[in-house]
Length: 297
Ligand code: UTP
Image 1 (cartoon, rainbow, N blue to C red):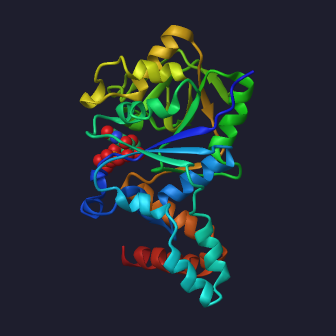
Image 2 (tube, rainbow, N blue to C red):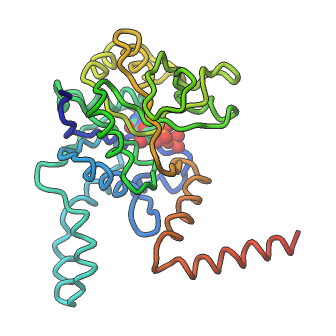
C-alpha cells in the first residue's frame, strides 16, 4: 500500500529574470492567464489531486503571493453590498483554510533542488508532490490527479514526462528510459540539461513530481550540478541508482511553459479561446490579425 500524498511543495523563489522588468516588482506566479494568476492554476490542480497541505518556498519580494491567498474583507463586503454574488464566488476559490498553507524562505536562489530541500521539516517522512507553477497544464483530468492515480498502483517516485524536440533537450532534465509507448516508464537514469546530442531520450521532465522522503534526503547530500545550482534532477538520479524506483509518466494534456515569454503568450491565447465569454471576440481578432499579416507579406 502506498501512502496517500497530501502535501505539495510549490517552489516560487526563483528570480524570474526572463520576465524582467515586470518581475522586478511582480512575482512571476502572480502574472495572469486571462484573469487568474499562474499560482491559482497550480493550487486548483493540487486540490483536485487531494492535496490538503500547501507549502510555498518563497523569497524576498514575494509578498503579493501571501496577500493573494489571504482574505480581502473590504473587497468582499463591498461586493456583498452590491449583490455581486458571482464575483464573490470567484474570490472564494482563492481562500485557503487557516493552517493549510505554509511559507518557508529560500534565502538564496541556489536552485530548484535547494528550494525543495528548504521544505524538508514540513514534509517530514512522507511522500510529497512538487508543482512548478510556471508549467501550466490544460487537461480534462488534472496532471497531478493522473499521477496520483498511477502512483497508487506503482508506488516509488513519479515524474511528469513530455516529448521534446532533440534541439530543445539541453534545456530540460532528460529521462533515460527504454524505448516504449507505455504511460509509466521505469527510469534508468536522469540527466539535467545534457550537452546537445548526448541526451539519453527525447523525454523531458516537466514541473510535476511525486517524490519519496528519500529524495529529500539526497537533496541534503548532493553537490551543485548544472549551472552551479543544486539540481532536483541529481537527487532523483541518486534515487534511481540506489533503488530503481523512479518512473516517468506520460500525462494527457497540453503543457505551456509560462516561464518563457512565447509559452506565456501561447497559453494566454489557448486559455482565452477555451473561455466561452471570450472565444468569439478573440477568435475573430486572431483571424483578422493573421490575415492582415499575410496580406502585408
Ligand atoms: P526557473 O528555472 O524558471 O527560474 O525555475 P526562475 O528564476 O523562476 O526564472 P528565470 O529563468 O530567471 O526567468 C523553475 C522553478 O523553480 C523555482 C522557480 O521559482 C520556478 O518555479 N526556483 C528556481 C526556486 O524556487 N529557487 C531557485 O533557486 C531556482
